[in-house]
Amino acid sequence: MKPVDGDIFSGTKPVDNKLKFASSKLQPWIDEYVPNAGKINKIEQFKGGQSNPTYKVVTQNKNLVLRRKPPGILLPSAHAVDREYKVMTALDNTKVPVPKTYGLCEDEDVIGTAFFVMDFLDGNIYWDLLLSDKSPKDTMEIYASKNKVIAELHKVDYSSVGLSDYGKPGNYIARQVSRWTKQYLASETENIPAMNNLIDWLPPNIPDEDETSIVHGDYRLDNMVFNASNNVMGVLDWELSTLGHPIADFNYHCISWRNIPQLADHKFCSENGIPTEEEYRNMYSKHTGKKLDEHWEFYTIFNIFKLAGILQGIMGRVRDGTAASKHAEERGNQVAPLAEAAWDLVEKNYK
Image 1 (cartoon, rainbow, N blue to C red):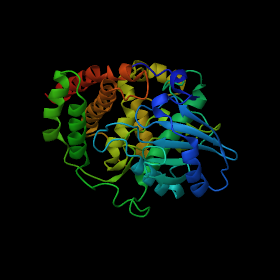
Image 2 (cartoon, rainbow, N blue to C red):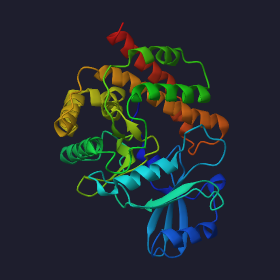
Image 3 (cartoon, one colour):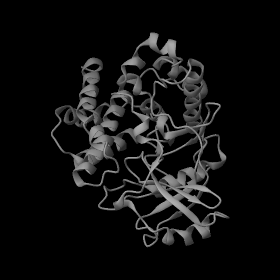
């Protein structure tokens, strides 16, 4: 998988015609829920984001972000902006940095679909995991900060922040395999034998170990905002978050070491300030006390399968004409290579 070109996805653009809404409809809601925001001056659409359309709302006194469900027919349980709002609001007073939220609106008469509003974070979003324009020192600081933040997330007592009903504790992997199998099949655009093999192999091979924490579900570099000191100032895109297995969540964050050739090259990593996969795992273990070795390859297989399922969902939206980006089809075309890579790991480690 190639590093993503950030210029394509960074910043804002005029709102796509099919995603426009009237600021006059939004204004009364802003007046009620966002103190001292003032009149809406401008609404733009963020270029990034394949799933939930996201807008920058500039008012007289604030820069805000509005995140909404897309219009049209949606897959069951997808585009859960209400869940995003709930988890970000709950994490506000923890060591996990999130933007301040102002309210969730489920009245579709306002802008056509459910949405929530949060603060705009004026920081840096990095799309290139190699951080090619950064010094080795800056790069190591960025990797260390994102490692610490996911560790802090997995250490949060979910009951104490009001999230005991945010998901089902236990059997997370089995439920995820079932979920992504169903969503993959609902979005299927071609027959992929390796994906069919994974769908059959995963359920009977789930490790007999279980623990529960809040999991992000899509924790990656471009879903966080960094400040000038290379620290994470806000984690974004909580659509796939739930109560789940922390090691599976952390492993998903680590599959880039398998997908990007440079990250598998220890010499390249050392010269550029990037920890190797093993070093990065050890950083997380030091923060959490968790041991990761025994079933690491299973979680890698599972997570490549999950990523293929996510990208197939994007391909399904291309098929249905509801994808939020013209680059969605390119991402969808990665499904078959990912499935084949995951099945290769099964044959290498389990056959």
